Image (cartoon, rainbow, N blue to C red; front, side):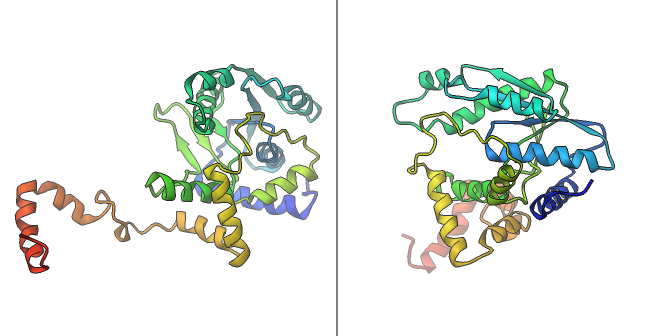
Length: 279
């Protein structure tokens, strides 16, 4: 079975590379794809189905959609499309939208809370459908945007892993599109004539959101310096702990932690006096 377009072949190559690099899919896996109806999750489901037909290993797919309860959400379109293409699917109706309205303060951004609630539902559904892995449609742009969001606004140097085992150890989340750009996913979904459904949450699309600001920043940087996004993704796999300030990573941190506060102060005070900063 040959790939239908050059884009599909390129995305297949990048997805296969991610699967091999991070051990995302194994023989006999049942992969539950989180299908929101957006371009990324549609593109992921389509690509995994293509790879499933060509792969030397056996694995199955089931698409699961978490309906947050908004009236405008076209879950019927998702169900119909999956049925037409022979994809096993399930729609889980929830009241996440109402829950967020009750928990959030006025003017607060609901995206992170919504993601946590939906993730909890996905974990439960993974058990119910017998899934061994949960595949999410996060792409290369999501990785670099998350990196900068945490760097600028959370004081943490982290992004997201391509493979994550839940705290309970019961579930494994995989992100096979780590090397695929958002533009590639968008065009691929359009080429495959998949019905892209936008988020119905009234807060989505707000250009004032931090993620939208980061997205514009990266867009401007990429326009001036092509390859910036690829460089940032490469940096996530090229970490040099000795050049960071985390005392848990710096070899000297263990020694300092073992020294009492009084001993540390006694050692530092003479240095401050030399520098003219001590009393």
